[in-house]
Image 1 (cartoon, helix red, strand yellow):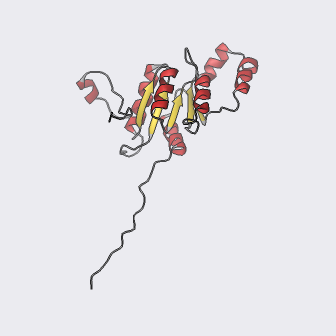
Image 2: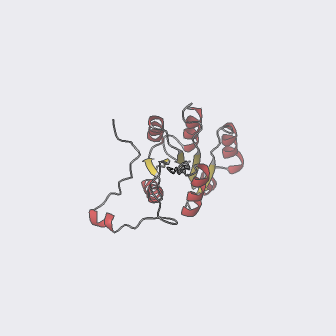
Image 3: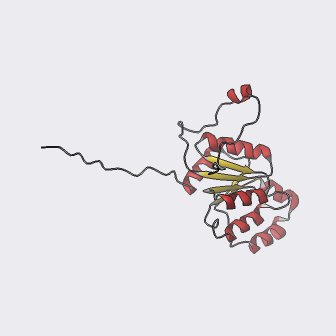
Length: 180
């Protein structure tokens, strides 16, 4: 059996630099969980930051810097949530969202747009025409949430807890028996 592709992200660098890296943990120490996130963003610094944040807070993480690679990863082993950039070369986030929503096995996976689109929209598009027309075409394929870059770690983790609740172990009633 091959190992799960949801392994901690390698924090490249020397052993000394890795040893001195402090976790980006929000709140008390968190045990690793079975919650799996897929990050798709064309900026390696963003994927690395988000992967570190999530891993340090108990998530299993995979990351892709190309939308098509991310789609392949999702199809191979569906995640519990996808963090998706909107503006990417080759295939953008809206097209990737449509592909996820059309896939029978992935349509129920929550998708969060993590984007700097507000600044991008005003510099590239006429928001009153082009973008609104484009978004209307895809109104049936909405993300579950949108977060603007730079992402607040607390806001992101709270949103992920809302969309993918932590699984709690089932309560076990233990009957005590006494022998007479």
